[in-house]
Image (tube, rainbow, N blue to C red; front, side, top):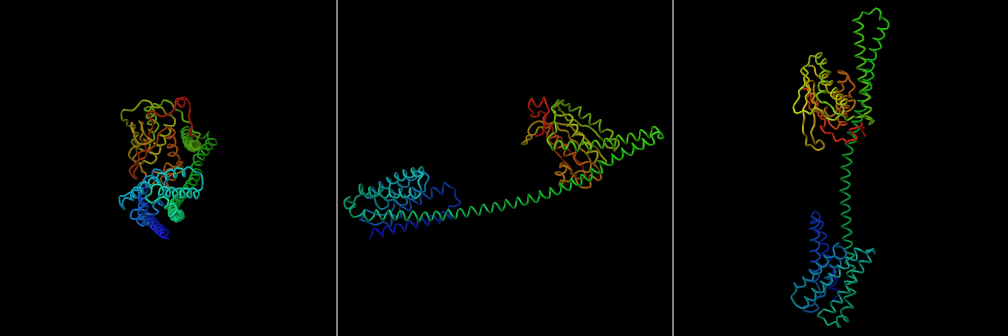
Length: 481
């Protein structure tokens, strides 16, 4: 009866220690590092073994019967490293010396050390066994209780005949039953802890999903606005193009009809004037059609870029000659500025480079009413991610109407200009900058914009001096994919 009461008291104390450990983990250790949690749990197991000895049954002045091996059993079931069990067994054995330094203490220390080695072996076996947890736990509990009994019988200070005949029939069954009971109670604690942890994780996951859904909702709303704006821009573009295409086409038809009907009555000056108007209208019509076709080719991935030697000085001179008359007609200063050193040649596509510069210069003259337009050439070395290397830079600077900060990211999109009235006032398809941006990417470069509303703009075309193109690509056209 005394053994039963003592073991029940031991079990109660172990349950109390387990409960306190659970509270400490929940409110004190849950946010600490995994290493600190691990070390703390080992210390708590050792403390549980010592508490069990404190409330053990004093068989004599030096001999104590208790359940100090039960925390070691639990440790064997939960710890992932076998050597930890040896440490726990030795440490619990060392706590026996807190009750005095005598033969019984040494036997207790040796017994717990042996049980620590046994539990380490059982732990190693359990981690590699495919048996169910209940079977592995049962084997561990029975093995530890039996070996503990054998150790006390062989090493203990109690006569072994008396111990086997009088003590073991009581302590062994009670120890096994209470070990199972404590394992079940601790398992229930662990399951509750796991449920709380899962609930916490589920709440955190739901919170993250709610935040992600909110962000996705904002993004979708923004995309919906952009799609509505794009749809509106395309509708405006189609309406504008129907007018822009009819205007030069009607001019060509009407002037051709006049020449056909009144050709004999018209003098030479009038014929020249009408032919110039037909040429200008046809040129405008062709330019609009080319813009639409180029944009379609780029969108479809069918635009071919030919890598060839390009004389950058020659391209600059061609641009000067091309826009010289435009500058005189608008009474604007137009000049070329070169910053040495500039290479004579780079590998690129001359036709597309000229097309980009024509678009940039056309916009500069279109939106500049007074002042000047400057074509500036220089070289730059960039170390920015994705833009490392040496570049030839064609900068088109003007003193025109400029572009607001809010509109600078919009004007490179297809069918869009700085505001809805631009295309009505200045005309055009609104595709020039979009095509120029796509062409620059195909050439391995990019376009940068610096502008301030009312103070002019600077569009800079960056072309690589040494494009990263293979030998085969140098010898034949390559396509956008």
